[in-house]
Length: 303
Length: 203
Image (tube, rainbow over all chains, first blue to last red; front, side, top):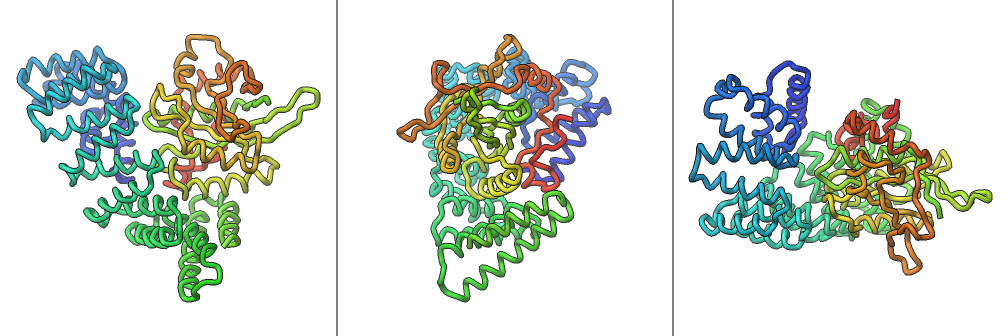
């Protein structure tokens, strides 16, 4: 997960390199650190360093990390020859390495040679059943083949062993949402919130899933999690503010003629969210303000 | 039934898909029905609004907000929601998933001639090599048994671009990487100063 400021920093570096201002190595290191996928640039800038002996020696032992990074980017961009060359160099330097064996299996996977890749991954896992990266490659390969249910099965098995892998829980949640298996997606977000309760993204996604599931209880819980998202983000999260309005409206519809105290609280929360949204739009998107106002009003009317 | 998609709408949808190569994307189509005058019935797709490129595709809240605002904005121009666009995550995935069908069903309730357009990746990849004028999308319409069916070349419906040069213009934008300028509803929700109407995209 990347913050807005980290992404801005990366984009600044990217334009700097693009416009000939140097900084390619810093850019590549930042990409590695943030785990962002910009393979076309990694390939382009990585090769400028690798193909220049002076630049290569200036990064010392990090040269090997760069070969690996460029190999993977090359696979992503279908530049199999570049990938093969990088892997060859790495193989020469580290003849016994399992990490490079995995890269070789990834080359097979990238070319769509599923059976060979599967054999390679399975044998790697036989030797080292706790190799997390290889487990995840198998899940990714199942996804790429289109066997989404197999991907789900393997990802679940993976999480039984490596239950602290947050990115894996997120991936599983996303797959469940794409399959419209919202209850299962909700479970994933519950795990994430339990282990990392101050990450607003999980609160927000959980609320979105609960709202999608629907029903009074889910809507009320969703509203709570939109509220906690707003709390954790200092009121700056547009999606959570909208979500609050949607929940308030949907709840009001379901509880017409219901208990009064909760109705009042519902309305208060709704008005606060509306005010916050209108204030923000007035400042940053004034052309959209009339549209926002009438949209929110129509939500209120339907409640 | 003829479905005629305007060049700007068409290009916007494809550029949106190209901007987010590693995920599914979706969008809605706006336009109107015309009984034609001797020319036959036609659904004119005059605008397209790119919606999401994230897990928001399968979730309701952002979709509801987006549809409310889109219907409000275009309703005042006498246009309504006439269809839905979807591009799958994988290159060779030609299946119309349930999320797409559900959204299509929702639009169908208010506009019975609603269409779903699915990006045809292979056709898009082959564009630079051929002289194909036909849109790089598959057309789906609802049949009598309420299922979304792919319309084949011998079907009674067809999808064409309003301007025959649409693919040429598209290829031009692709080579200049114009997709970087596309803003969708996801982008707007992340930063409300970004305008999902893309008012200056083709200037």
